[in-house]
Length: 95
Image (tube, rainbow, N blue to C red):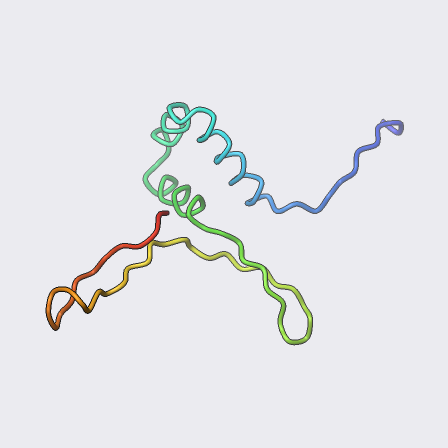
């Protein structure tokens, strides 16, 4: 064991788990769906939320770096040119 050398990095387990899920989903969507179907409703919701979040890194005024998780949502904009005074809602972009 003393001869075994492995660099240990600080890694965000949530980020790694999310990357594994995205890789599985891209490689085998049917297997991913079968795996998710076996989960409880609560865990299905948690997995969906995890897959729809992104980590945003920013630097504050003091120079300290921070990372926060933000949900990716569809933008809904009001089109005031159509539909009279009430306007109509349009979805812009993709998830």
